[in-house]
Length: 60
Image (cartoon, rainbow, N blue to C red; front, side, top):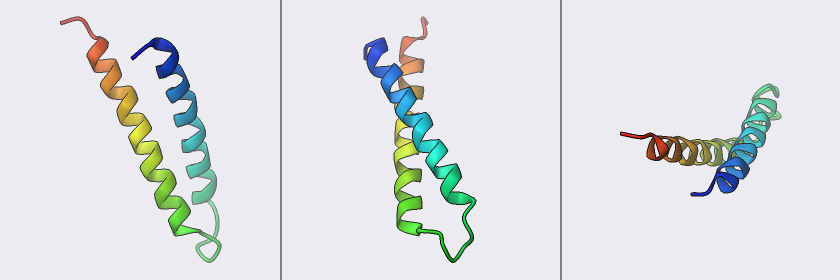
C-alpha cells in the first residue's frame, strides 16, 4: 500500500479509537453496546491493517 493510504488509515484509526474512548466513559445505562462493538471491530481492523503494512515494509 502507498504511504498516503496508510496515513489516511492511521488518521481514521485514531478517530475511531477516540470515539471508543468517549463511548466507554458513559454510564452503563447510556452505553450503546451495538455502537461500542462496531467501533471496537472497526478500530481493531484498521489497527491490523496498519500493523500488517508496517511488517511488510520492514527489510529482511
